[in-house]
Figure 1 (cartoon, rainbow, N blue to C red):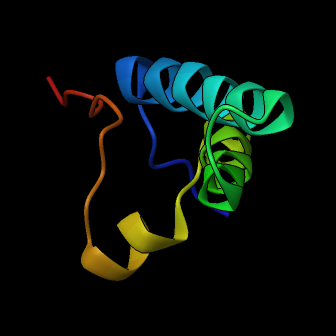
Figure 2 (tube, helix red, strand yellow):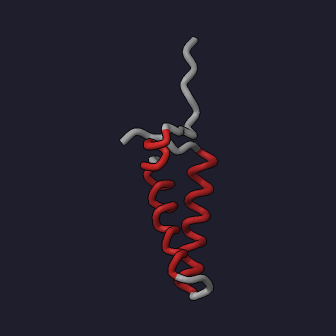
Figure 3 (cartoon, helix red, strand yellow):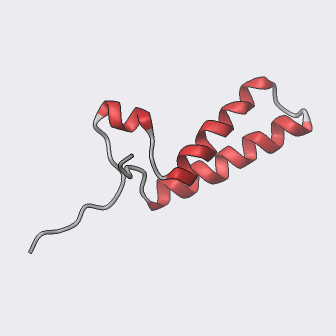
Length: 65
């Protein structure tokens, strides 16, 4: 799969995903917190299927000189 998740986006996904999973395991939030698994996975793999469908890319583009 093509990389389409950039640096800041990637770090935000990993942090928020891990936080949601942790809060779910602690019982602070409900089962909807397991959506953090998706965020964590897309952050670690650097690819997001939704971005591919929508044609969005948060990776920096290579500049042609």
